[in-house]
Image 1 (spheres, rainbow, N blue to C red):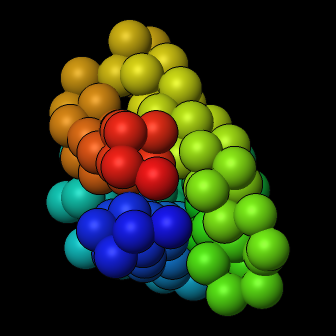
Image 2: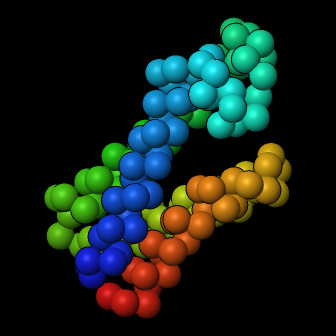
Length: 121
């Protein structure tokens, strides 16, 4: 794995750790509300709390998967492609179904990492 690919994958993993933090650890904070464009009042609803915390765990698992890939895997490129591919697809889906900004905010870093893994390794 090239240094560029590794740096991009680390950035993607850190982004998903931050999303986990917002969604699962401080789901009704002003920062979470501002980041996701949801009112603080809506975020306080029990159903929304359950849903957003669940979504946060998915983001944590993506970060853990990328972290495992970078630290322990003997096949870093293949697993890196798998995880950044997953994240890219999910970001496109989220952009189409929820908010177009997801494609830029979550998708672009993952897509750049994916392209670097495919093109430079």
